[in-house]
Amino acid sequence: MESVKSDYEASRSREQLGDATLIVIAVGLALSFYIAWCLGANDAANPTNYAVGSGVLTLKKALLLFALFASLGAMLQGYMVMKTIGKGVVADIDVVGTLTVMLAAGLWITLCTYKGMPISTSQSIVGAVIGYGLAIRGWVGVNWSVMWKVVLSWVASPLLAIVMTMLIYRFAALMLYRRYAGGNGRLVSFLLIASLCFSAYSFGANDVGNATGVFVTVMTKLGLSPESHVMLMLAALGSAGIMLGGFTWGYRVIRTVAFRVTRMDPYTGMAAGLGNALNVYLFTTIPYLLIGYGMPISTTHSSVGSVIGAGLVKGKGIDRFTVLLISASWLLTVPVAAALSYFFYGLACLAIG
Image 1 (tube, one colour):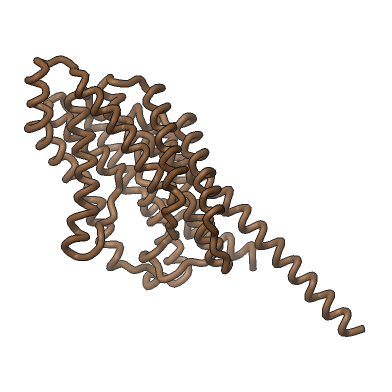
Image 2 (cartoon, one colour; image 1 turned 30 degrees about the vertical axis):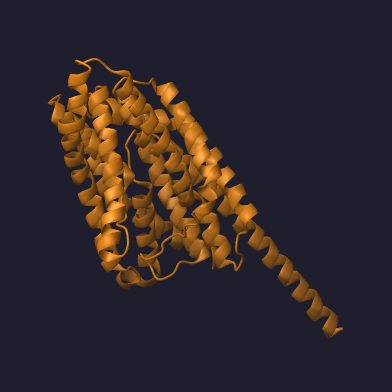
């Protein structure tokens, strides 16, 4: 009788464990889609603001191209990028920590997107990971030596993007301007649209990993390694989320960066687009050649910096109040995301017991 009872209890325990695992996996999938939506809603401005702000494309056409090429990038190459949450910032992160970190980051991104503020998804995630590290081990739970390098890139990237944009306009865009006698020029418009399409494709291929990373990390912690067909499914899920985010709330941030920071024409728009692309490339390549690894960079910070550079070089003026609001949202991102993550993780631990 005791043996039968023991077998029954073991069976019930396995069933409960299986149910709990399924719930965790379902929550991981839901959060992956939510983060993908956040990416599409907030980061849609990065590839599109130059073409929209310069008047080459309407907002609807730019969003359509963004959704199309970001989805292509996510589907064709997104499965190749398997990112894990919190790598380097903390020693390790558990399943509950992964879920609370992404929930905290997602809520902050959603609030900023609603207000039309362009913020960095990766910066939000890093801030939330810091909150988790502080919750489990206090100050020593965070690898601050890694953090200072990341912070350096956050400060340097928009400043260098401003410089890059001004230099490109002085040499390249100004030459085209003289060639076309001040007209828009089909070549410039083509370059802006091509830049949008390529940037959106690259964004989908690389950044969808920020969304699928939730599920990948959860599966890894559960001792399950996602197979190739699962990664393809995740890429499709991320693609759908990015597309939905771009179409629903993408216009909010695009309007801020494309029109409220400064006014661009096709030439300053082209210079800003190229300046941003070159800045991101150099941050990835030069540190790798010098110290063995690429510097983490926020494409959002770089994108906004290049738009500011376009306004400065053209002398059209910068809306200082808008820039101040954007800067404030950047400064608040890490502490707010960290506080939310700290709170959610503590709440989850109390609920689990």
